[in-house]
Length: 360
Image (cartoon, rainbow, N blue to C red; front, side):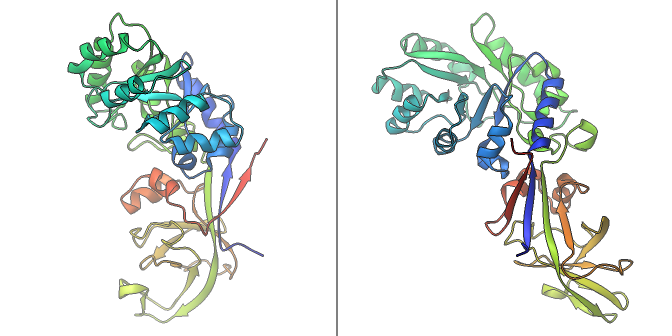
């Protein structure tokens, strides 16, 4: 039985993109971000493909447990740390590395003495103003750490707010603040996300934390992934469900937002926002059929889109359609929808079948 919608995940591309990380930051260890189900690509499969990474990073303890249950033994870093004593004890049991970003987390550790040394990363807020200890809190933080001998400090980290914009001075400022705060202090340093890895070599330090570039999308504004040497890991496909021939002047789709300019064929494709294709993609956005770019017309609905078949007389019902990926960058589709590739990848619906290539 043929699937209506499916995504092909190329794990060879994931491995290639990890090698690009190594080329961009040859002297740094790699903490690969596998959060949000491997950015929609499958956390377990991607983690196995990234055997060459030095550590894996997830957002939540549940994500970490999924990897441990699947047999992954590599160090796993919980980027959000833990919220309560039960999670702390479970993290210790599983050998997770915790990111500590707030004093309440230190209090949890004080109140729940643990039998084993607890590996932690300490996060500083250098300008993102999301998670992390404020610079003014660093003296108190040092005092508290001195009273917690059960901690094994893996290092210090921060997160960039504007590294995707290579013209912004914000990233250089964050790098400067981070290093000045830690001047003379022991511990590894980790600053660079995907954008930092590519555009800000001064941020590489001891550990880099690639995310989106591992999956083959560009982390930089206005710079295509292909020019950065990255390969798309996800290609989303559907099929032509129906072909209609319509006279001139006929409105197509909900709201009648697009009208046929002449007598013409249109194809109905079996994908919509119920599958994760963005509802706000406008008419004119490309899909690929038989290797040719074909423009979407009318509104995206829950289960279907409609495309313009003028000049494509050979297209037939059942033909495969590529929505993004190999031959059609996800960044391009995301830009048309007013979003980013991260959201496309993470937004795949449960109806989309997943096929893996390059499994070990």
